[in-house]
Every structure is written in C-alpha cells, then in structure tokens.
Image 1 (cartoon, rainbow, N blue to C red):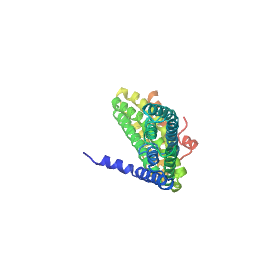
Image 2 (cartoon, one colour):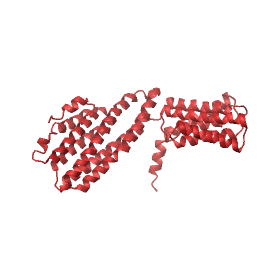
Image 3 (cartoon, helix red, strand yellow):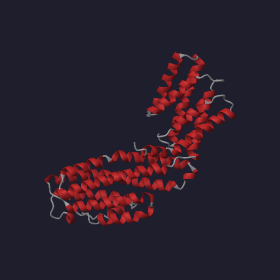
Image 4 (cartoon, rainbow, N blue to C red):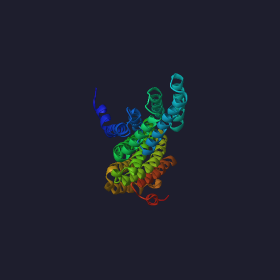
Length: 349
C-alpha cells in the first residue's frame, strides 16, 4: 500500500488540525477556568464541528454553522426546562434541531453536528440552566478567532485547484490536436469528453478561491495574498469562458474530421493556443510570466483569419477557425489584457 496519499492528506490538513486543537482547547480552558463550568463539553464540540477538516472554511460558513448549533442547543435547553429529560423529550428536541439545521444549511453533515449538540444537552446534566448555551457560544467565538488569527493557508488549496483546471485544459487541447492531425473522429470525440470534464474542476477552483478570499479579508497575516487572489479570480473568470469556447472548438473539430482527413494547420494553431494556456498556468505563482503568455497568444491571435488559415477549405473548416477566435480572446483576457485590446488582437473578418 502506497503511504503517500495518506501522508498528503495529513499534510493538507495540518493547519486545520492545529486550528481545531488550539480553538477547542482554548474554549474548554476558558469555560472551565474562567467561567467555572465543571465540564464544558460543548465548548470543545461546537468548536470542532464548526471548523471541521474538509468543510469550506470561509468565516461566513463558520459563523452560520456556529449559529445553527447554538440554536440547536437553545431548543434543547428550553425543552429541558419545560418538559424535563426523557426519551420522548429527546426525540422532540432532536426532531426540532434537525429541522432547523436543514433549514439553515444544505450540508447534511451540519445537521448531524447540530443534532449531536442537542443530544448532549438532553442527556448530560448541567449545574445550571443554559450553561451549555454559554459553552457553545464560547466554542463559536473560539472558532471565529482562530479563523482570523490562525488562518488556513488559502493559497495552497486554491493553487492546487487552479493547476488541476489548467492540466485538464492542456489534456483536452492535446487530444483535440491529435484528432485534427490524424483526421481521427474518435480522438476528437475524446477531446470533447475531456473538455466537458473541466467544468467540475472549475467549480472546485471557484470554491477554494472564494474561501481563500473570504479568509484573507479578515486575517491580518494574509493581507499580501489579497491582490494575488484577486488576480487569480480574473484568471478564473476568463478560463471559465475559455473552457466553454473550448467545448465549442471540440464539437466542431469532431464534426470536421468525420471525413477522415487530417487538418495539420488547424492542429498547429490550436496547439499554439494550448502553449499560451500553459504559460498562463506558469504565471499563477509568478506574475512576471504574464507578458510572455500574452505575447505567445497575441502571435497566434493575429493570424486567426479563416481566409488565411483555410483559404481553400470548406465552410466547416472556416467555421472551426472562427471558433478559435473567441477562445484566443478569452485566453488573452486571462493574461491581464483588457477585453477590448484582446478583441482587437484578432483580425477583423
């Protein structure tokens, strides 16, 4: 068994583990030594459930989770005062808590976490009414504090997701290029399948980018990452459009090579656009490489005239060249070129 995936999971969760340990221990210690609560279990469990290991770590999401669990604790505390403890009281408290939790969040794990807090309140006695509510609030505050003061590194996950997108784009373009070079319909269809598979990777990137930007807004130690995350957002939005146009290119390429004829010139043009996309990927962690990516793409875009690339080709051939034009514009926009300038880089037809 290869231990590397397991070690990678531990490494990726390192900061989250430190966050949870610090917040849960701090919340428990505060409730026990400062507030005098004998066993502030909920101070630790609310912290653990609100931070989590794999859940979105945006401060707003953490706050929503904390509020939901505190509402669950409050429901159980009120029911405990009104009806006492017992099996049917537990059933009512749990049903109400799960209902409220499902209303507040689409995450099933969130409802389960809130239900656990409710069960703890109903089953484990407390020295005073609403003591567990105070413990839950302490745990929630601790979770929010470590989110701001001991933040998870947003750049690592965001860059990993961004590179996954560009790797998928590179693979899709390479397969479409092979289909065009060989006149191979099956290869071109495979390129279309790969292009369609990029969208979930884009959504992963968007989620990690939004999470990182939200953390950087409140974390004083991550101020320098804000501008870089904003630049990556611009690249993401351009690549979202570029991948949509890549799917159009793939569909037209598959239709075009259905006759079994190779299109080496158009394959070369698309391969050059792919090299430009690869340069954009290189610029993710080095902004100084953006001009190189822009120059590569401008050199290709300036020749995207159907009459030049496919002078004696059919309407379908020229239609494929036409579909490469918006792809080139989107990639140029990803390099930081204004959209008007990117459009002007493509010859008028």
